[in-house]
Length: 298
Image 1 (cartoon, rainbow, N blue to C red):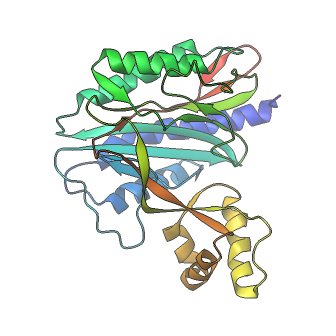
Image 2 (image 1 turned 120 degrees about the vertical axis):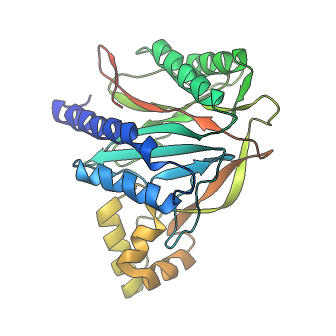
C-alpha cells in the first residue's frame, strides 16, 4: 500500500510532467537543435520543483526510443519530421512518465491522432484487478482500425521507486496466446504508451547505436579510488534511474570514460529504431492505482 505522502509525491511528479509536456511542442520546429529541446525540457522539470527521472528522449522519425543529445550534439530537427518527446520527472524517486509526438509538417501527422486515441481507449479499459492483456488488445484494434500498425516489441511498463521499468510490461498488441501479463494491482504505478507506424512497416524496433543514456547496473561499484568517487556521486544523484552521458561528463568526463570501460558497472541503452526505417508516433501517460480508483497523473 502507498502511504498518503507517497501518493502526493506521485501526483506532484505528474503535475510537473503535465505542465512541461504542454509547453514542449513550442521547442520543436524545423532547424531546432535537439540538444536545446533536451535541455529546455529538463530545465523546466527542475524549475517546477522536480528532477528528471531520465534524460529527455527526442526520437525523430524512425527512432522509437532512447536517444538523448550527447555533449556538443549538432543534430537538428529536419523538415517533414515526426518528433517524439519522452519525458519524466521524479519527486524523491516517485516517478511520472509521459510522451507526446510533434509534427513538423509531416505527411504522417495522422499517426499522432491515432496514438492519442489508442492511449485514451487503453486508459478507459484499465481497472484494478483487470487483465493487463486487455490494454494490448484495445491498442492494437484501435491502431489497425485506422489503417496503421502498432510496434509489437515496445511496451508500457510498471514503475517503482527510483525505477522506470519495474518488471511488468504493458503490451501494445493482442497477447491472448502469451502468458504472464497478469492483472493491474492496487497501489501500483504503470506507464501506458502506444507506438504507431505505417501499415507497410515491420512494426518492430531493433537496436541501433548507443543513445547516450546510462544506467548503473552493479551497485557494488569499482574498487579504483577515482572511478569509485564518480560512481558514488552518480549513485547519490540518480540512484537506479537512467542519466545522460552529458550530465555525467559535467561531473567528471575522464572518470566517466574509465567507468564505461568497466562494462558491468554502467549500461548504455541502444537507440531503438523501426526495423524497416519507417516513421513512429508515440503517446504515453502514467497511472496510479489505489484501492478504489485509477488516477492518470500526467
